[in-house]
Length: 245
Image (spheres, rainbow, N blue to C red):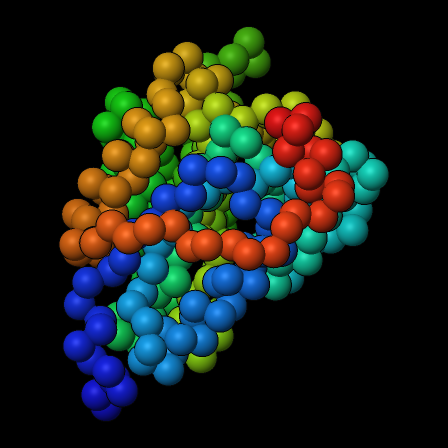
């Protein structure tokens, strides 16, 4: 079947927001954009941004994994997965892709997203790895009690009318102490890390360059556009946390 407006499909748009974006505003924009993509009114989009500190709960989240429910705001994400953290120093890449145009295989798309992040990490000589039964990207580090695995990037998607929302989060230089309020992704036996935690002086701009180059290798060319204009304001709690940053 031909897409209602196939001429819009070949080039994926790419946008980067410099200012932090409130979570509720981002999800509202994603929902509207995904609807337009499904209707053939807009191109696919990858949107890079940062959020104020917060937790999101996926559809498989267990209440017992919310260790400190009063530490940071908690949002119901509606995506797959469990609890995760978002905050300054973490690069979020929201992925609005039409999987009907890509074979309709969600698992294959997730594998492509994992490959994307692994390829981006290669630029910094970081060996990112995938694990069966554990979505996301992992790195191995030696420790006093032997080698351990740490998560450096999370992946979670929602698919509506064949179009994805949500996407990936890569830890560049977030405050890792903010993870203490949750069991990240429901995994007790492994920790979380970041490029900074690995001793790498990587800026967000460096990460963006690596992500774009790796994305184009994995998915094809992108076209840079202006970041979405968010007209609504953050909640009072998000504004306070933004200042806390």
